[in-house]
Length: 314
Picture: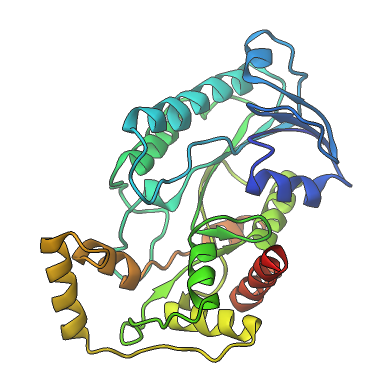
């Protein structure tokens, strides 16, 4: 197939190219256009406006403003990029000869926190903050037009994606553990879903060759991990003994309440984020693609990511 991938120079885009380049003819659309192995040519958004981008069989829309966990980004930027660029590329897709469109949204478009045991696609979206709100606006725009004849559209809601080149929260946690700093929240044994980049590229490869129905699909590994298990896996890869402190929950909550009053790093909101459950159901996409189990286990994916961190930092 001939593929057009937006945001092709980012973390997910680079891994997708590495996975798909031997089977497909790949073109890019990005704000920068350096040569990239496996990519025939990368175009700019101005090229898109001018009609210089060649037709493709499928479009994968990755370009977007990532979630700023420090909350320093202006809300306007999220809507300009996450909503505005999605509207632009989706309108282009509807005019083009492409038959498939994959939009990378986020689980944060559905829910900032999971109410109940597991998050599935039937939830009524309740995003919190401009990142999730801008993503759900993009989703709503796509859904308002996705009944076009001869077109198949897929909205992906991945949970935290990790793998080679990842610069997100896992990298920060790895840096803390590498320095030997103890994890003080061992008494909170929460569960979180992650997405290995290898499982993600496997899903996309299968989807491109399938006749799966238009729809919204959660993306995540088969098994969630507790934060304590995640730390143990990181320590195992680093050859370190895990340093997990089981401080009494009541004491930790008291410290967090004090932190909220005194504007300290550990406050009630940060404690909630660090200790809450966020488990995502990936059953719908697996059923659509007739996948019994994804190729990489959650633990294997984390080990692979940490090994890449070690190589990068050595």
